[in-house]
Length: 291
Image (cartoon, rainbow, N blue to C red):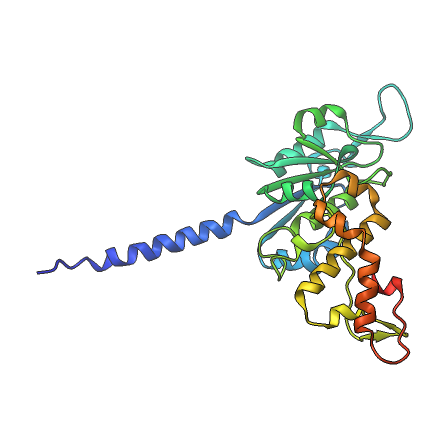
């Protein structure tokens, strides 16, 4: 006689599976707290397009913390004159520190947006996308009291060698670059892998309808349906674009030798393809339209 299991025992694995599924979905959410004196700048930008869609889907939890909420004088003062003299004002340590503490909670990587920091690139964006909680600190005026940076900041990050009014625009840039790398954000999972700076080369040029625009045609090879030849054309186009626009990348990054060897005959190959598949009529296919 077979022994019957209690009904409750049969339901337990389902409940456990549901709990595990819930845990997985919660752990995949990226929380980003932005410490800023100007929180009103963020919503118009980060509620639209891919970032807005990620927020609505629950993949990105964006929060804004204002250091002015941690001061209690009549004017909500957060800045003062620099010791030693100099132009401009400096953000005071205590309100920034309190705002960072509130934002960080029990954990989180604190990133200070600064022209002195590590340069943002795709590699760093991917590193940050693996974090579960980021705290982005936006400087303003002439900067932030160094003591709070020494005490509370894990990473200083720059988006380029130029001066902006504050860290708000760089923070938006970081949020956008990181969000698109989160699983489930882009509709096509491989889209982020095929973009410029993900690999050693710039992206290949893209075309859509109409096939002929103002006398210039889409490169004929793209109309053949031959995925092997299209892939080879795109790889060569990447090499051409990288050499023309960012030759430094060819020195900084490892490009397979076979690609560099093939690249030497790129022009000849493209001319052969165009000659073989040129559209009829008086359509112009120039080097510019080809690559």
